Structures are given as C-alpha cells and as structure tokens.
Length: 530
Ligand code: N01
View 1: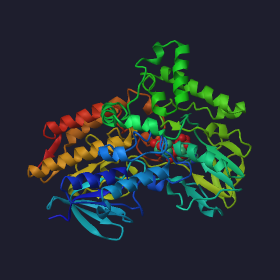
View 2: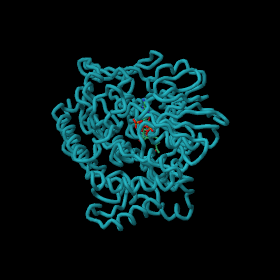
View 3: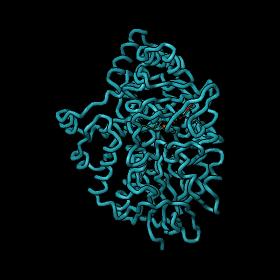
View 4: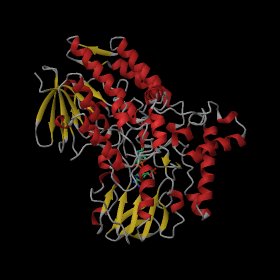
C-alpha cells in the first residue's frame, strides 16, 4: 500500500490547487516544494518590477466563488508581492499547509510496476510512495545563466532575476550591466535605471512591448464586475486564450489602413497585450498582416525614443510580433532617454568574456559593479528534466524526450503510468491564462483518478498511438501560424543543443477543454486503464 494517493511536485499555482482538489475528492496528497515558501514562479521571481501581464481579475483561481468574492486585488496587473500574498491567503483559507512540505526538492521518481506505484526521492534522501505522480513544476522554473568565460572571476555580485535575494539589492550609485531584454529584462531595467549611476542594457534581440496602462482597481468597478463573475469565468473557459477578448473578428488585410491605425491605437491606449494582438484574426497566421501590426509598434518606439539611431536599434525586426511572448511595459522605451542608460548591441558585437571589473564585447569593454542576468529559462521541459524520472522499464524521461518533450493532451507521457503533468508539453499552457489552464488540468486529472479508483483501475497510461496523434496535431496547428518563425523559448531555441520543437497547443483553450472532456466522456479514450 502506497504512503500517498498523490505525490505532487511543486507548490506554485498548480501544486497549491492540486492539494486542495485531490484532498477534497478524498485522496491523500502531499506537495513537495523546493522553496522555503509556496508560490513557485511567484516565490522565486522577486526581482524589482516583477508584475503579471494577465489582469488580476483573470489571473486568479475560479474554483471558489467565495474566494473570488472576498479577495480584492489592488491593481489591474498584480505585482509579484501581491500574487504571493494571494497564494498564501489561499493556503491559509483552505488549510493546505499540513499537506505541503517546503524546503524539499524532489530529485528522483521511479515507477514500480510490481506495486503499481511511484517512489519519490527527495534531496535529503527521504522516500515516499504514491499511487499517482503529479508534476506541478511549472513551465518556467529551470532558469538559465549563459556560460560566459570569466564570470567566475567577476569581483562584484551577479544575479539571475529568477533567484533574486529576498532582502532585495540596492543598486544606488552603482554601474550595472543587464543581459537579457525579454519580459523580465524589460520589467527590471527601468527599476535599476531609476537608482543606478549607469545601466548598460546588453541587447541581443530587440523586443516588442505594449503598454500596461496599469492602474489601481476602482472599488465601484470591482463591485459591479463581481456581480457576474461566474458567467465571466465561463466565457474565459470557452475563450481562445483563457481570457475573454473582444477582437474585431475581421482580418487586418481586409481593413483600410486608416481603420487599422485607429483600431490599434485604441487598443494601445487601453493597454494589454492580448486585446492588442487579438484585434485582428490574421495577425498570428499571416506574415503580411503581422507586418502591419509590427510596423505600428515600431512607430511607437521611434516616437518615444529621442535618439533616432537608438530608436532603430530598439525596433524589433528579427521575428513576427507575438511569435515571442509579447512584453508589456509602460516605461521601458522612454527609459532610454535617460542619460544614465546605454543600449549595447551584442548582436553585432557579442559578449566575449567577463573580467573582475566588467564585461568585454567584440568591440568594447564595459566597467560594471554588478551584473544582472535576465536570460530566461529552459522552458516547458527543463524543470522536469532536472528530476531523474523513470517510467515503465526504468526508461528515463530525458530519454523519452531526447527529440523534444511530448505527452498525450499535454497531460500524460506514454510509458509513464499514473504520471500526469499540469500544463505539460502539448497543452495550451504558456499560450493561455495559466491559472485557468492549471485549474482545468487539475480538475480533469482529479476526475480521472476518481474514475480509476471507483472502477478498480490501478494504472492509467497514455497509449503511444494517442500521444503520437496528439503531438502531430499540435505540430500541424503550430505550423499554420507565425510562431515557428521565431527563435523563442517556445521552441527551445534559447537553450544550446535543445531540440527545436514547438510544444504549446495553439488550438485554443476552449476547444482544448472540449477535447479533454470528450476524451473523459469516452471512457478516457487514448488511455489504457488496467
Ligand atoms: O526570458 P526570455 P524572460 N547572451 O527567454 C537574452 C514569462 N514572464 O525571463 O532574444 C545574450 O524571454 C535573450 O536574447 P534573445 C513570460 O512568459 C512573464 O524575460 O534570445 N543574451 C532575451 O533577451 C516570458 O516570455 C512576465 O536573443 C541572452 C533574454 O535573455 C518568460 O517568462 C514577466 C543570452 C531572455 O528572455 C521568460 O521571460 C517575466 C545570451 N547567452 C517573465 N541568453 C510577465 O508576466 C539569453 N539572452 C510580465
């Protein structure tokens, strides 16, 4: 008899809800969390400026109407400390703490076919057995620091944004080098520039960013909105992105140019990436339509940045807008008008080395007191690959995923019985409102376990043929869009040697949910239940 029904790896949004959902269904459950607190990505990414790019009314649990009514967000886009407070409130409110084990990194998990159970090993050598293994490790947890020769000789401190010191860092009067201009780099740069003597932004690829237009939540608006939160959540579940967005419903290529400008400007003024990119139906599938939007955004950069040459350098051209995660910022481009900020183009003159006093590129040396890496993550599969997961026959997950991560419905990898992944490869995951997708996955998996238990089923395993067909579908949908045209973390292009495979499912959150429900209704079609 296993120690637990369900062993959960991770206590971020997914692990926290899993503990509640499985426990409420009568299962014994334990979440193992490496951090000293819960929150996952919101625990670790405590760098200054960290803020969600999905609105707080969407980026919150919907499973409890009472929670949804009682909790009040202070801002349209919540900052990291507020999201973390919210998650701790959820853990308090639903008394989840007894089933969450902090400071415990899962290092290995292996399937025991004789006993139909998993053995989970933690960093301190503890072993626990469980009927089911649930990965809730998140899509953006395994951070990456590029190997720069000489980094170990650097005399000053260096940081990765995803492991920011809890006490904060004071850059007042310091010369700081920032490497990375993705969502994170764009958020932290203005915060550093506000206090540093000098900020060097080392840019390899210019990125698109739309304004947030962040603001305090108006209590009158909140009261009115909450009168119909339930039907809003239903709309979100059936939507494409997990957030109800009102697009024009028309292709940009069929629209008069002046009308496109007016529509985009309205959305630009309102702020937010999803309504902006979702304005027209063809932006993410037709390069010509995409170019219209990209040029609109480059115009905004050029009119913001005073120095025309700098404006050009900051204007993205390397990929279609949206094909890398669209950044959001109210002050990133304007920051370059400050005298203490310097943009360094490391595309034309790459970083060569770090010395005790600074950073050398192919054409100059930059003296800095501190270095900040906002260089991203080994996304989607990285965190799971760091655990020695072995399925049927002792096959390592790393071996199964040698040519790229895959699973049936983004939920279950074939060859790994009784293992489920929350927002795994092949699900909408990072291309959706993560909280809503997490809830959908956890509830689907919970219902599957209830079904298995009540039918005397001891193993649930995705069939290889079902996994193959699903991943072929995921690829087919992706290659009908502009997404594969970018060297993004979506395809693993940011990690040297990682196979280039597009794994998020772009078929839409609503249709995906319907497909998962149909699979369950058909007696878990595509799964072998023994
Ligand atoms: O990471 P990234 P991120 N030398 O991979 C550069 C979510 N998120 O942490 O583009 C030099 O996007 C790299 O350059 P390039 C969101 O989903 C959300 O910023 O590869 N530079 C790039 O500029 C996001 O997409 C929020 O040429 C190197 C940067 O580092 C995801 O997390 C906030 C380099 C990495 O950008 C990841 O975002 C923050 C090297 N060797 C994050 N290696 C919000 O909700 C990498 N770079 C708002």
